[in-house]
Length: 328
Image (cartoon, rainbow, N blue to C red; front, side, top):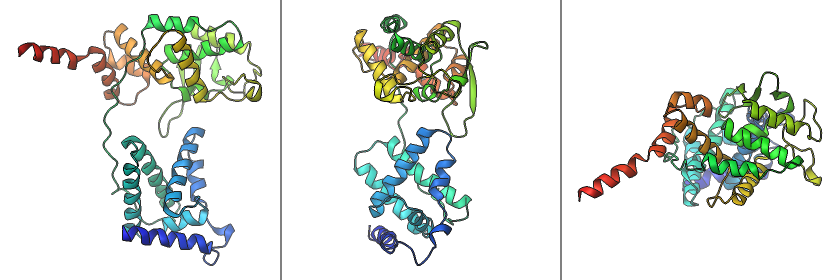
């Protein structure tokens, strides 16, 4: 802890001195801006900026200026590792989940990696390991019969057309909400029956996914009511007066899903990802557990992830627990 306090004090002194004696403002490289510019997704950029800012607020109670970032990147290897390990312990002591802790540490690692690429950092944080995360196994969702009730609640008005098209993409193509909100009108090809999306993951390129006729019709029907149906406009937009025409947010989609599912009598807390879970689980059912085929629908990079859905679908653990209980 003493070493960490010393490192923090070093950074704080740099802040107090504004580092004017060491660098001319125009000559100071902006490593953080380079890191953010390297991220394709706006949501990813915001998340990285937020996580890096949290680290510097913890370390020196300041936002990550160009000068402070450079001072952090100029630390000795041992000093940097000690500082980041102490930050990791702080996050865990706060009660944050392993996944959240790993994400925040990953943002700092990415900053250091960018610093190394640009020649402004000589150390590595590879020795700072992530926490083990238990695989997410709650793949429960709703049945096709229940989802039909949800779809039926969409009105014939403008908002209803928009919501219906979004729900079809969540179910028919098992899309993630961020994949939906990032689409522009130009990404939709009604003739070719495709939608070009930016998938999840580092280095992902845009890919065209095939749409079934009912989904194509739903999107086309919505575009007839779209307030500004130009190719460069977002595919799905807000309809409230204050935000009319702005790109619809993932949170807005979550609220819409939760509201309609609740109105349809679904008791559990629902979200776009729960609809995706429902879609993938149902796909496993209708294909008799064809995991490779369902992987193409879900676009999971690892087959093991689809196996989690298949394990939950079969309830193997419950079946074996019943057999063991019967024996005694």
